[in-house]
Image 1: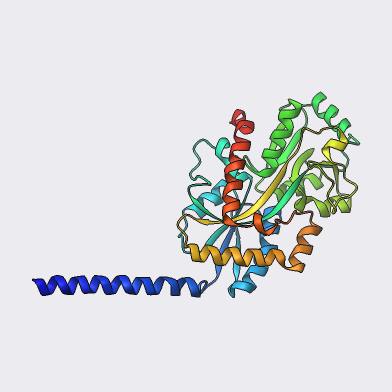
Image 2 (image 1 turned 180 degrees about the vertical axis):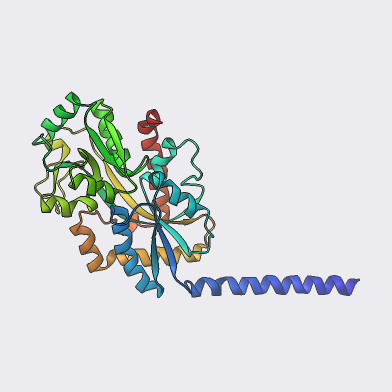
Length: 326
């Protein structure tokens, strides 16, 4: 009996020792196969664009392909719920944003995940200023005329967005609360399709991230009334700030960031963070993001701790603004 106990104890000790040896080895060899990056909107939108630019470089660093999977629906919460329930082995990640990981909390009372409790933050990828945009033949010539026009025609005008809780929806909700209007919202399965509708003149206006808008503004297929940041953006030097154009209260900047399911190994998270940071330091990646108007986060802003703080602060910021909308 004593021998059996001793043998059992020895086996347990050996097993524990083996596990202690194997775990670091697994972390050191990660990844051994391709990684799936869920993007919670249709292809061609700002989150999709940022994710593809950054993960393209990350794949080179990690030595494995990163496959983008676009999953649409419910303002990005369908895909985010799926990511939260995925295995926490580092092979399913998500590129979320201010909508999926902050604004969703007050907008969806029965949200199937919580941004702080169900995800591990990896890295902030880009800041994306918000623009007030309209179809190219929209009557108002500038922001002051736009404000007067939508106030006078609030029941007739419509605003496109990528679903309740998306950045395009949330930022225009803020705009509408400032203007004290409730126009008709026209939801799409992503900002890409919403932008296509704006270009086609099928909707009146929208609030959108700069990444999605620069090519269309430069091509003259849509109007840009103002950018909702304190300073003009180098990629659109002729677009005035909201303060310059007469609406200083409207300030909004979205962001894109990378997350993993809760419980993902710290070693794996560290590998992913390092690869993302290396991508953001790459001159080609930086050039592409800057040309699209993105704001590239500095090293201190890219840490998981900084991203966790950002998510917490953003939930606190948007909850009082959006709670009345639910």
